[in-house]
Length: 200
Image 1: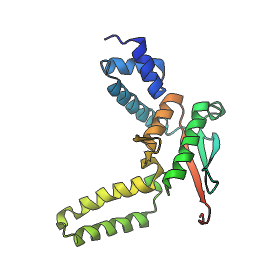
Image 2: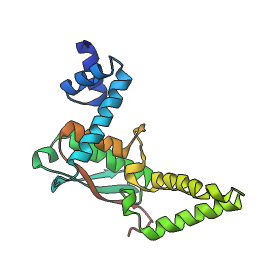
Image 3: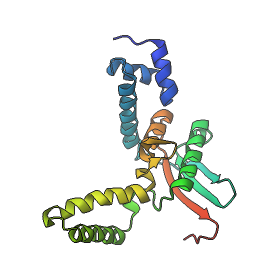
Image 4: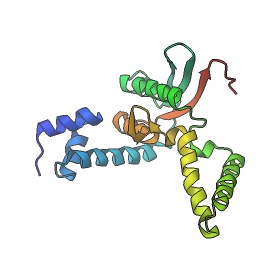
């Protein structure tokens, strides 16, 4: 199937992916833009897992100060080369993540950073709630697991829907930027400051 230059441009404008990647995704999707976006997203996720083992010891510290100067975020995002650290897309990504942290107050970057004690305690609470609501014992574990997913979405940065595009999680946004830039990118650490609130 042939795809037009206009279709490729439209897909490129909405995803930021390379021209050949856009063309290939459109051919695979038989010209369907939405399907092509999905194909590019999956490709980004595959690229992310492939590059995850590579050392990312360059990067930047990004900051975001909310209007009124009462809320701010400092964030370290790493990449593999100094060249990418100076890349405009990389800087925009880092700033977007800092702004997202200010708005969404995650506690951890990923679910594997949640201390086991907290995970167990949360599960117990959800099981107790389900039993108190009269749910059958056989499905209590399943209910607790479902609520744990919501807990991770509330508290873990990578699981949260991106504030500028709720259809995208931060993990998916990260996968997109890795696919576009072609290097391993790691959200290393952050601190969120709010006036009158203590930080650990």
